[in-house]
Image (cartoon, rainbow, N blue to C red; front, side):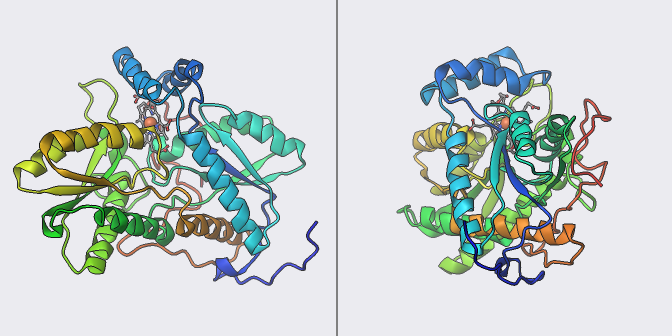
Length: 377
Ligand SMILES: CC1=C(CCC(=O)O)c2cc3nc(cc4[nH]c(cc5[nH]c(cc1n2)c(C)c5CCC(=O)O)c(CCC(=O)O)c4C)C(CCC(=O)O)=C3C
Ligand SMILES: [Fe+2]
């Protein structure tokens, strides 16, 4: 037991305090992924139930997992993040327990919530491994939280969408610089290619709170993060690096419009325009998910080799210390809001902070508009 008196805290400087009150438990909520070959098909069935994904696409995605031994990297990354968050809690004198639950694989969210309640906790603060607003990356997590919490006494909040938090962005600035330094091509002929998960354009355009552009909050937030990383990396190297935002992992029927261009098509277009090398920066992913190790490290890297284009992939935020500290700052900030204080809410230039409770019409569920979700205004 630690009997040290709690350090005094200031609401405007979340890093200085040990306070997470009123929260009694922190939940890391993730997507989940298979851990062995026998898990792959049941996992894919969990993910795609009722989503209208063509069977050919499912078989193809299954092959991506089998190529890596039937094991997704995502669960081990959650374990590593939990360990680092625990260390950061110790450094700040935070004694609140950390739990982990997934939407689509074991440990399942509903089991974790039952355990949190059995352990005697009521007020839960959620951190998702998804950083941007959109139905798939925000509301779907909140719907699953709502369903899993039904029949419990738990009162659940979440941190704001955090992709535009300076700590998430600075982790990518550092990893992009490191990737750039591995390329031998002339920096002036190198391009920064920011990549995120494709989503249907109808989902993109309705994503995020107002104000948002006609492209929607999901794309707006990615553009802001990409521009900030590009600006800071360029300043650091004293050269104006051009950049683009492109997409990977499109699924759904070909008739349905999704965000584009696809990263592979884009690499071909860049080659035609005389670009010699690319740094691929997966700002849409908090850690090296299957999309990163397959769609980028395997497929896009092969496209670049075929084209004779220099290729380096920047690391994801993962357990970068700036990112780990940012997540705990975001938890302390959310706790201060729950105590009706007015904490500082840092964001990068040109971006608006995410909401603490999502507006009811934000990131709508286009198939089932009335479906209830957690953490809503
Ligand atoms: C925006 C977004 C994120 C980022 C935010 C976040 O992190 O949440 C994300 C993450 C992830 N997506 C993942 C896996 C899959 N996503 C699928 C399908 C889909 N994703 C979508 C969107 C997103 N997905 C969409 C619009 C679909 C179409 C079906 C539907 O409308 O729901 C499918 C079905 C097969 C296929 O169609 O590809 C799989 C297997 C994994 C696990 C990876 C691992 O194991 O490391 C992770 C982290
Ligand atoms: Fe996905």
